[in-house]
Image 1 (cartoon, helix red, strand yellow):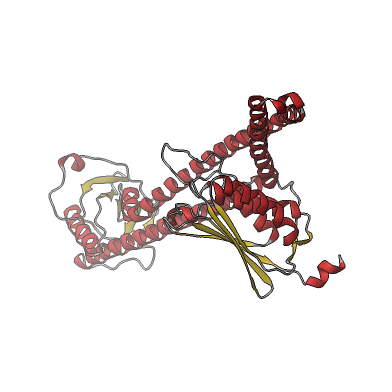
Image 2 (cartoon, helix red, strand yellow; image 1 turned 30 degrees about the horizontal axis):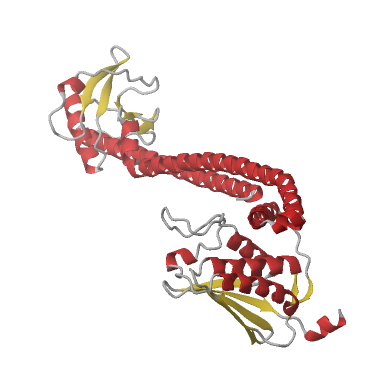
Length: 433
C-alpha cells in the first residue's frame, strides 16, 4: 500500500470513527436526558397524586401553585398545607409509584413545625413487598424548606442506577462501539508496523539488487573473454563451463532486472515511452528464441499472425519484455515436450493476441491471483520451475500502464492461454513515421 493511500485510509477512518463516536455520545446524552425528564415527570405526577389524595382525606384544598417542587435531581418537596399521616403517606406513595411504573425505592421525611426540622420517615420500596431490613435502617438527610409549613420531602436514592438500567441497550451498544474503536486503533498500529516492515524489506531488496549489478557486469565481461578465447574454445570442458557461466549470468541478470523494474513501477519512477511500433518488427527475435528453447526440449512452437502490418502505440522495450515473459512462462510450464501456440486475430481496431501452452493448467482459485506480486501457484515441496513470482505482476503493470487488457483462461490438464487485447493504430500513421 502506497504511503498516500495509507494516509488517506487512516484519515478517513479517523473521521468516520470520530463521527460515529460523536453520534453515539449525542445519542447517549439525549437518551439520558429523555429518561431523566420522564423520571421527573412521573415522580411529580406520583407526588401530585399523593398530595391530592391526602388533601381530600383531610377535607382541605391544595395550594394554587408550586405543589411539587424539585429541589435536586432526586429530591422533591410537596406542599399540601394540611397535616400528614406518615403511614398513610407511605401507602399512597407506593400505590402511585406502582401505578406509574416507577418501581424504585424512596425515602421520605415530614416537616415538624415544633422543631423546624424534617422528621425522617424511612426508606421504603415502591412495591408493597416486605422491605429489606438493611434498607429499612438506612437514614438520609432531607433538607427543609423555609417558606413552607405543611409539607413532606421524597428522595429517590437509586435514581442514577434506575436511569442506567433503562439505558442498558444504549450502554451495550456503546461498549461495542468502544471495542470497535479499539480494534480500529489496533489495526492502524498493525498497518503502520507492516508498512514500516514492508519499506525496510523493499529498501533491502533495492539495495541488494543494485549491489548485484557490479559483480554481474564483471561476470559478463569475464564470461565473454572466456568464450572468445581460442584455447577455451578448443577445450570442450572449458567451453561448456564458460557457456554455463554466461547462461547463469543471463538468468541472474534477468531476475535482477525484473526486481529493479518492479521497484521503479512501485515508486512511480518508470516511464512508458509510447511510439508507433509494428508488432512484426518485435516478434521475429522473440519467436526465434522461444522456438529454439522449445525444440531443445523436443517441443514445437506454432505461430498464426496476420500477415499485414500490426501498428501499436507502445513502448517497444516493455512490449518486448511482456511478450518474452509470456513466452518464457509458456515454455517453462509446458512439461517435457512443450507445445506453444501464438495466435493473433483482428477484431475491429484491436488485435487479440493469445499465447497458449500445453502445461498442467491452472485451477480456478489460483487464476485471479496470478498477477499478484510474488504469487506462485502452490506445488508443495516440489519447485521444478524457479522464479520469484514477478513476471506476471510486471506484465499486468505494463498492460495497465498502456491501457491494455490481459486475462487468463485455463482448465486443469488442458494448459493455459493468456489473452492480450491490443488497440491498433491506423496503418497510415506507421507509414508516415
